[in-house]
Amino acid sequence: MWCCHQNELQMLSDILGVGGGGTMRTGEEAEGLDGEASNASMISGASSPYQPTTEPVHTGSLLGGIRCDLDYLRSYLGILKVVEVVLSLLGFICIETIMLCSPCGGVYFFEFVSCSEFVVTGVLLVIFSLNLHVKVPHVNWSLTDLVNTVASTLLFFLASLVLACINHGTSAEIAAVVFGFLVTCVYGLNSFLAVRKWRRGDSCQGGTSSSEYTRARTASRGEVEARPELG
Image 1: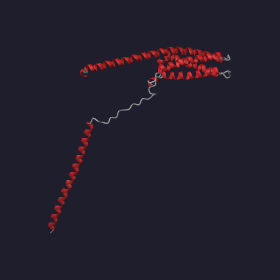
Image 2: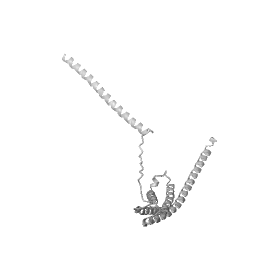
Image 3: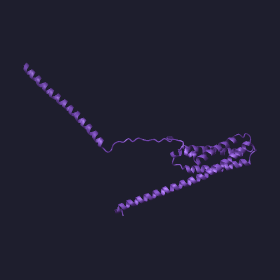
Image 4: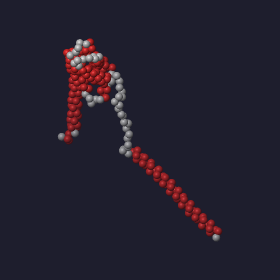
């Protein structure tokens, strides 16, 4: 009896051992298959042409790379801009020192013109001297400068003429009239140079566009000649 029980226990342990070994081998085979699948997915992902690309996004700042353009400040247009700003400021200061006036229409008109042109011309001077106009290329800055100089010439001439005719003979009014006519002459010279610059810029742009059109037509004709079956 005891030997029979031992034989049965031995047979049961052998069966359990075989089953455990089979289970362990099955687990190892599963791990091997998972590793091969992960390697295959890595290889297929590396060789796939549809790879997610992350390109660096360059965000250009409007105020990046600002520098003072000394060449512009030394040019005729830059010097005229500085003189216009200074004379407009001096005329505005002179007209502001007038405490009593009757009538005051000429004084108020000259005050408005001198203050407005000081601000507008000063802003344009800052834009051109710091090369900020390069960062906003969709604006025609040559035409903008031309319109400002022509309008300033007419407005300062009218304001100075009105103040010269309607004044009380005070030193502040006389000084304002003198500065007004001086800045009118400066704006007139700047208008002449601005017109020349604007016309020169338009002619250059026209020549560039016509040359680009000619190159495009030549390239299209070359393609047609290279493929005679299209004819």
